[in-house]
Amino acid sequence: MDCFLSHFAHRFGAKGRISIPAAFRQALAKGGFEGVYAYPSLDAPALDCGGHKLLAEIDALLATLPPFSPARDAFATALLGTSEILRMDSEGRVLLDDRLKAAPGLEGEAVFVGQGHKFQIWEPSRFAARLDAARARVRLLRSGQGAGAPA
Amino acid sequence: MDCFLSHFAHRFGAKGRISIPAAFRQALAKGGFEGVYAYPSLDAPALDCGGHKLLAEIDALLATLPPFSPARDAFATALLGTSEILRMDSEGRVLLDDRLKAAPGLEGEAVFVGQGHKFQIWEPSRFAARLDAARARVRLLRSGQGAGAPA
DNA sequence: TCGGATAACATGGGACCCCATGGGCGTCAA
DNA sequence: TTGACGCCCATGGGGTCCCATGTTATCCGA
Image (cartoon, rainbow over all chains, first blue to last red):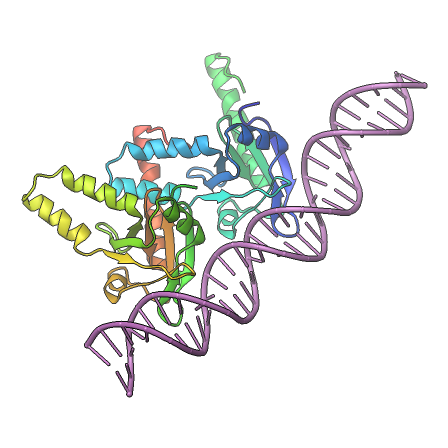
């Protein structure tokens, strides 16, 4: 598997550590990158996570902006300034910064949601709400247009 | 890690010294450059810092401007004329000039913000405000233009 | 088809190491 | 001489590494 699929619920251990799902670790390893690149999502109360491919995407985006311009600084601050490289221990766990846990409201348990090229970390009840909304939206689109959008 | 990522809050010690984050020191060392190149940022109340790669970028920027032109003189004065080479002690600390501390309003505590090719040093509360603004700006640009920032 | 063995994985805990910070001392310049 | 600066060592806490345990899924043989 070379992309992030399905979703998994894990708990925070006594030291605030949490296990990255094994399936996601395998996908990360394929990218030749030890560690997880993570930052608070801009749109959702969640963390966006990925390997160096995700980081390369952001680099590419920044490269399109002129150096020393305010726009580039804003992007760099928002995307790189809030991001972290999470190191995994030998068991595949990471330690989430308080800052990273605060925005998504993570505490106790978390849901890892595959999104293909990246994955997100959610607080369980917030994810359930988001999932319901997404499914309702898909139903609405399908019934309205008769288009067979895959759920 | 070959670029500046994440952000860290450090305090000024009794002698006015402050530690460069270890992750940033590693990135600097990869550039084969001991010491930190620093100058007051053009757009923000902060210090722009980096290794010789940053210096090379500035050189490249200046090279695009016609020699002896007012624009080139202005850039050279603003970027090079106000810059300093900060020496690190064996523990990775630097001593900030009063002039460098004045513009960003640095005192007591400072936040080191990775921006990929360079990093910035901020006064904490000012950075918090700037970060909010930057995230709002990125959201706006992305939703407005459909620019392909990863969500 | 059922049951036991085995492997993979999530989680707990202890120990060590790195890093941020404090402080002392020597050196050089004003 | 005195203050500023650079170099050295000390220290405490947080992070990382390593080992241990239980549980679940998988596989294989009866």
